[in-house]
Amino acid sequence: MDNNNVSDFWKRLEEKQRGRGKKKSLRAICENTGIPYQTVVNQKCDNRFPTVSVIVALAEELDCSIDWLLTGSERQFSEELNNVKEKVRSAVEILQKLN
Image 1 (cartoon, rainbow, N blue to C red):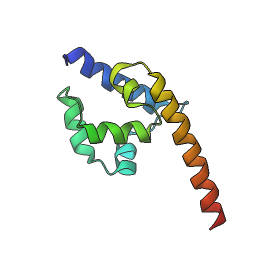
Image 2: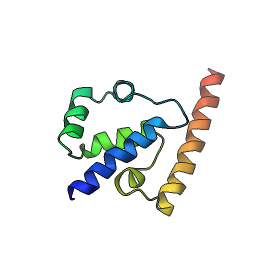
Image 3: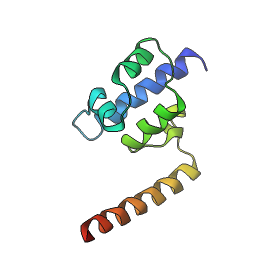
């Protein structure tokens, strides 16, 4: 992929970091996911894509699809998967409350 695609990836990541008003720091995101912070910073500074496992972890932490992070668009499958993920999260919350 060309450098525009890579820089667009990092811009979308920053957009998700801002979320709903309060910006979630990259350091906090890395801590929550177990991703080495310096690795992500180096990849961002070098304008490189992270590894697949890092992209998956970032997408999950930022509650967005991998498709959207990589391309800026959602696919129907991703929307369906997000619905399933939300149902699983709700079920897990209910189970945790029961314990």
